[in-house]
Image 1 (cartoon, one colour):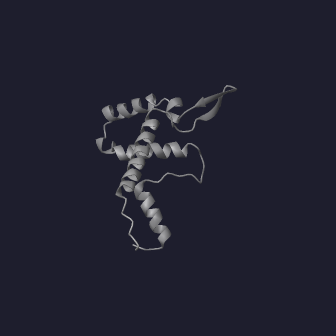
Image 2 (image 1 turned 90 degrees about the vertical axis):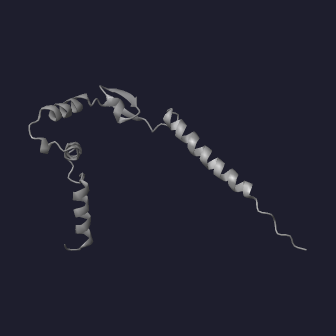
Length: 122
């Protein structure tokens, strides 16, 4: 006589445990730098230097000093909207590479652009 094999719920438990353990171990390895992002080679003064990320090679103290000075001393408080300043900073960064095919759009500009591609009128 044919017997139905019993369900093995412990297999599902093992799979869930392995998935969670893998996630946690990977997360911890990343936080300790064991699985850090790829390093890049940059040539400076004829020497090749290995660097891990942009934050290691760029000092943004001047940027934050100017931001704080504007925040503290600029007379027109309405122009000191944080979103406007942030988007303006990013636009300036992208514009600095002077590439006509690389642009940054604010969420509103992006929405308008996507709507123009859909061909709908408002």
